[in-house]
Image (cartoon, helix red, strand yellow):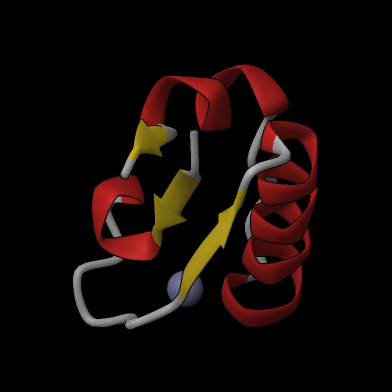
Length: 55
Ligand SMILES: [Zn+2]
C-alpha cells in the first residue's frame, strides 16, 4: 500500500510538492521537512497522519 501526502491536501494549494512511499513514517518525515524548509511551517505528525492518503 503506497501512502501519499500532497501539499494541496495540506492547504497549500499553489504548491505541487507530493511525497509517496510505502513507508508512512517516511512520508510524514519528508512532509515535515518540506513544510519546515519551504513553508516555514511546523506540521505535527498527528496532523500529517490525517492527510495521508493511500494511492
Ligand atoms: Zn509545499
